[in-house]
Every structure is written in C-alpha cells, then in structure tokens.
Image 1 (cartoon, one colour):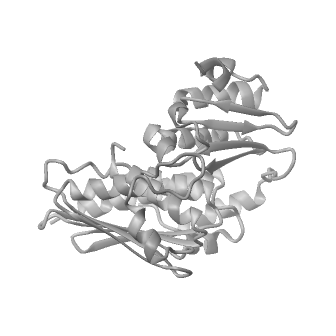
Image 2 (tube, each protein chain N blue to C red):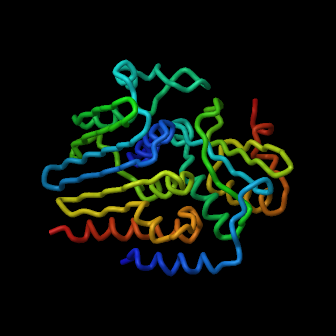
Image 3 (cartoon, each protein chain N blue to C red):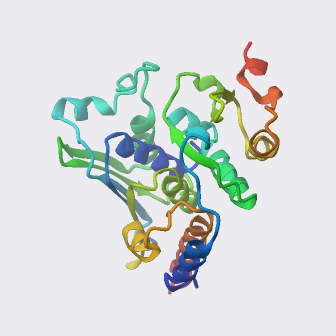
Length: 183
Length: 123
C-alpha cells in the first residue's frame, strides 16, 4: 500500500464483511502537534476477545481462499512506523472500532493519499451501507453523511453516475476549503 | 463550493430521466476484487475507471460491484464479468487503461478482450 487512504479502504472492507450498516471514517489532523488519527468504526458483527487478540497476526484470517490476512497488520505497521500507535476495540453484536495514530513529521510517515477516491469507491459498490466521513484539521471540520444525501435523493440511487460525481467534487472541494482556512 | 442544494437538481434530473437502471437477469455484472491483495495491486483506480467509463457511455444495463479475495492474488487486480448469457470472463492484472478498453470492446460490443484474460496470462 502506497498511501494510507488505501489502508482505510482495505480496513473498511472488514466492516462490510462484518455486515455493518453504518461505517464511520474519521481523519483528524493537527498541524501544530504534527499528528494524525484515523478511526474506522462500524456496527457490524464485532469480534470476541480471542479474535481481537489474533487479528493483528498476519497468519490469522477468516477467509478460506488463502492462509494469510494482511489488512490489519499492514495498517498497524503504518502507524507504528511513525512512532504512533494502533488499537482495536470490539464487542460481539455491537461493532468494531479500529484506531491508528501517526506522528506526521516522522520520516516513515506515508502520504494520506486520495481519501475522496476511497470514499467514492466504497459508496459506489455498497449503496445500501451508510458512510459518515469526518475530516478535521486544526479544529475545523467537514462531514459527509450518506444518510443525509440519501434523504435528499428521495429514492434516486446513491451510486448513479451523476450522484457519484457530485459526491467526489463535494468531498474534494470541502477538503480543499479545510486546507485554505489555515491561519 | 458545492452544497447539498445542488444535489436536489441532480435528483430531479434523474427522476425525469427515461433511462432507468435495469437490475436483473439482463444486466451485465462487473465484479472487482477488493481484498487487501486487490487494493494493494491497484484495484481502486480500476474500479473507479469502470464506474466512470460506464457513466460516460450511459450504460444502463451494467452494474459495477465488488468481491473479496478469490484466491489468485498474483493476478490482481482481477475483474470478473458476468454477462446475461451465463458466461464469466476473468480479466487479470487490470489497469484503468485496460478497463476502458474492456468497457468499449466487451461491454458495448460484446467482444472479449482475449489478451487481458487469465487464459492468456496464466503460465
């Protein structure tokens, strides 16, 4: 993975596999502290303590097509490489929260990359799942909530081409605005 | 800057449109592998290329979806195409450029792009 947004896309796949109906993705950056935190939360089937303990082990997977599961270990590595930290909390039947914390001034910090592409690909192939994307920069915030978008759409599919293009531009413009407001 | 107000215009246009996306037996399904292996190999731009090409050409009978790892990680990004006649075509080592050609040749004109299939690439 060359950028963190791809790790986020990958981790969100676990939430989808867990049968989540609502997935939250939060990016919080502080320029002054040189920190980034990424939190991916879902209301899927969750994991028991035994599974949580094994989930960062690359040789643990629930898949049947091969014997390794690299998504979570790779994501954990991206955070720890920067001197940051990683955690998973989960409750069976309630959901899972995956958090990664980065020191962005560390030489091994990966670029965040294209979060818009990650969000639009998630929405385009999972129209029935709701996503809440929150991007915070130095206290300013942008939120995109597909529940709000679907309410406006009144039954028009959220993954119809014109709507997806709108969502792409909507996220891009608001992200750019967050950067501009920097004092 | 874009506001959610603009979404209302898009909604109204879509509602008045005569083209209704067909879901069902006569629909072509494009399935992109989106497990760790697929994503690391470049599945995201391939998926977005399919979505954009399908939108550009107004193909109302095509549904782009995703799947997990199908076990041939060395060939990722992998895209499977299911046509209404029951045929499945597996394209391997895909790129956005290859995706555009698959949309034009296979989805629009019905000609499988043999050189991108797993059959032509398996060694």
